[in-house]
Amino acid sequence: MEWKIGVIGTGAIGRDHIRRLTNVVHGAKVVALSDIRPENAAGIAKEYGAVFYETGEEVIRDPNVDVILVASWDPTHAGYVLQCIRERKYVFCEKPLGVSAKECRNIIDAELQCGKRLVQVGFMRRYDRGYRALKEIIDSGKIGAPLMVHCCHRNRIPGPQHTTDMTIKNSGIHEIDVLRWLLGEEYETGQVLTVKQNRSAQDGLEDPQIMLLKTGSGVRIDAEINMNSHYGYDIQCEVVGEKGTARLPDPNTILLKTDGTRSCQIYSDWSERFIEAYDIELQQWIDSLNQGALQRPSAWDGYAACVTADTLIQARLKGTIEPVLIREKPAFYE
Ligand code: ISE
Image (cartoon, rainbow, N blue to C red; front, side, top):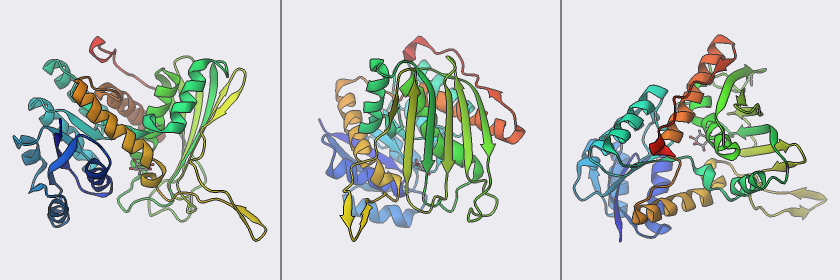
């Protein structure tokens, strides 16, 4: 079967997903799209032979559209996802699921009421080969129980709209999700440290920030979220266990030895670094639609990540350590 997909948002990630759904993924066809910049989206619609709509609502309502992919501006995600649930259409929503825990709670309530899982959230790191290998090692018990995790998430430069809150809610949210998944537990408390600020950070942007999290079993996590590394896009994660450590591998790159130097390329952004993870993620999403059994990350995972991000933002503003208060998980999401 070929799933007819409507894409909302044709910025960097939306456009990349349209290319992927058309040229890489089997069993999918992009048939409709929209974007707040119509001049941009109309051209892409023409290029891919899709119908162009002025609004995302029209994409969702189109009877020719079976399923939706939301890749628009973060504050619009929750509204589109709720409309998809009302229309009983499957929806893949790029992270974050909403810009507040409240928005995500509304999505969970709507999905529970509908009685069918329709939502998958685009936390693509769970599909990355390196993170999967790391999870296998943790689960095998080879390094004993995890005690600490040290992470860094470095972007070369931030986008022009980037804000201090987005460092946690749009960037650090990847660490929040992937570490919940790696460790298989929820967070208990969160705190944010601001360190000496980078003078090249845009006006008003607090950068870098360090997120500190403690899980229910007491694992301590520190994650540097840095928007101005200048040298490249660099994702690191090391898990320290009772009997050993395990570190996320760098992606495959050629080690070059020439002119008395050793060097290797560092990717410049997430679309290169996680290209394979995105491919696998969307192929598996389509496969799961065929099987009628959605995989995770679910709306619940999107909610848990958002509660944690909200908590960290509060903790940063107040300069305190805050409890992460996640509501009881409904059996529906087990
Ligand atoms: C961007 O929106 C992403 O989702 C990337 O994966 C992340 O690394 C980057 O920091 C975000 O701005």
